[in-house]
Image (cartoon, rainbow, N blue to C red):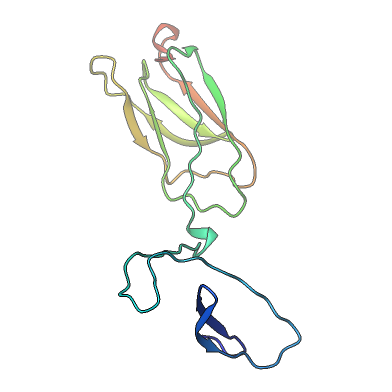
Length: 154
């Protein structure tokens, strides 16, 4: 127990244990009800507590969702706001592209990609090394390098 703090344990109106706090100008009182304890009886029951260790350990995700057939030709989408203090550990794109394409984030080339064409299934590419901007929305652009009739996301 930190110095300058005290506590007591009471069952009903009976105080079972007390540690006095040194005289202080500020006094804060808190109570917690615990079940399973009875004076003169063995302990049964439980109590638990949880606390947030650090908000920086919070994991979140952001998505730019394409549902179904998106269209033909070059496609752009905004990725929702990424907090300014975020650390991006992993980033992926996953879809069924009709042909090869270049992928841009905020107008900067992230990479050139070729889809694996197997029974209309999606291909997943790791783009963790690309440069996202934090504290703002990011513009994601897919610029196809093939013919217009092959330039689609499904």
